[in-house]
Length: 171
Image 1 (tube, rainbow, N blue to C red):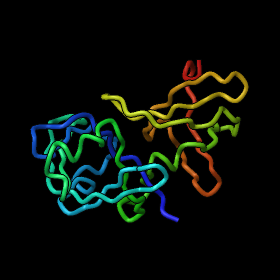
Image 2: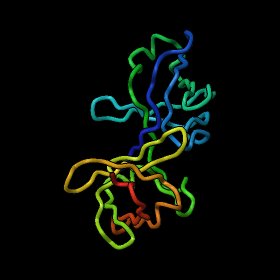
Image 3: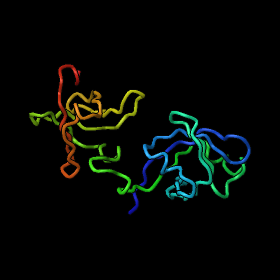
Image 4: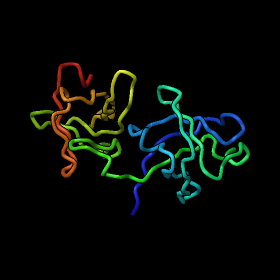
């Protein structure tokens, strides 16, 4: 069964010839938005394929894309506000790289094997990527920078992350 990953959200049309401004969530912009590649829009429970016709970056997370056979503003009006997806492809990852969706739901432990909580999401902030962790008992959350200093081990097979705990991190 195919697994789809969120790539971007369509914000608004640009001009009259089917170009759309999107907010990009992907770390693989050069690959995901490459001319001829396929993205999918969810219509009810079906993923409808769309072929990239053109792409350029506006800086930051803003991209402008268009699709083959949708070269008119009237053809894309129903797309506005919807999300676009790509098929999950493990071949895009280097060794020790992960899709954010693979980290969500993993249990988090400190280096002494004390359970701290569960990863509820991966957040991208301008300064860095962080893991949002929900504590088990209190249902409160805390954030851990996603870097080598804090994240010591990721074990997808056992659904476990070990972090370096410093004073005040979980408060």
